[in-house]
Image (tube, rainbow, N blue to C red; front, side):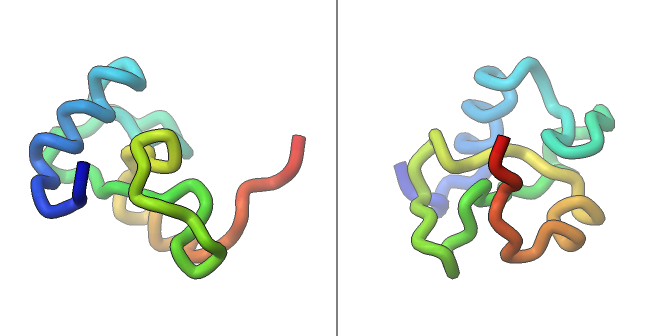
Length: 72
């Protein structure tokens, strides 16, 4: 599934992740206000696969930038 149909992709991500909320801060927002974030950034080899995508609010997405997730 490409990112060209963002509204549909956002619906799929919201259904998968429990609603229209930011993956990072947990805030609930209107789906249209959320952005699609690559967990592993494209600049680090991340893909557009659903497994690598989450919904994020604009401020959290901007703050994360192209940082890799912390190892757990």
